[in-house]
Length: 120
Length: 108
Image 1 (cartoon, each protein chain N blue to C red):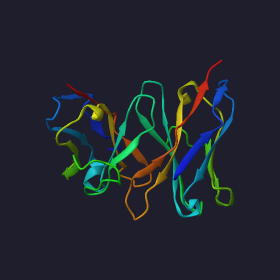
Image 2 (cartoon, rainbow over the protein chains, first blue to last red):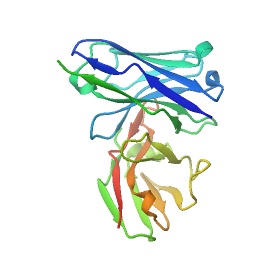
Image 3 (cartoon, helix red, strand yellow):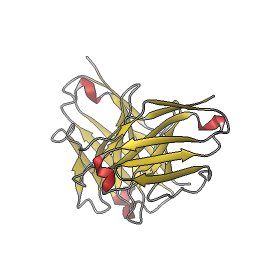
């Protein structure tokens, strides 16, 4: 079964750091680009970051650029999001999402999400 | 513009046809993808590319684009189609992705 499982969420104070992980299974992780997408409570979806299959290309949303880092370990079938200098507005469910192959822009597989709460 | 605009809410009678739209300048260059999200669940891809459905998505879901507007059409809406629907595409730079604000679909 193709699956993505996020972990690492929790409660953190403003200015703090957190590292999210996404474990992939059921497909050849190393051949897929990956993304992080978040959703604040009661709000819509917001794309956060993209990493290509080889990690050679990385993009960030302006709202997190300079504070968040995306990485992956293809040997461990894992995707990461290092979040520093966290703000109240970073409070959200964070999803990892797989890029569909074939040159088509779409996120075809999503994890169940992990909740990040930034609060003092 | 890097924004995608959706109507906040749409309703449809059971078994009727409904169109959910998404407007944005980037749609002149990039196809939209569409996601269904039910309460407490992760989004699910329902339409991508010109008009493609992932396996398992009913054929009552279809997509189209005209100019700067992408549309998701549900022909013969079912009760289980009640959900939030989001469009997504790259922005005009091609280096970022943007979601529409979402449309809450109510099936009456």
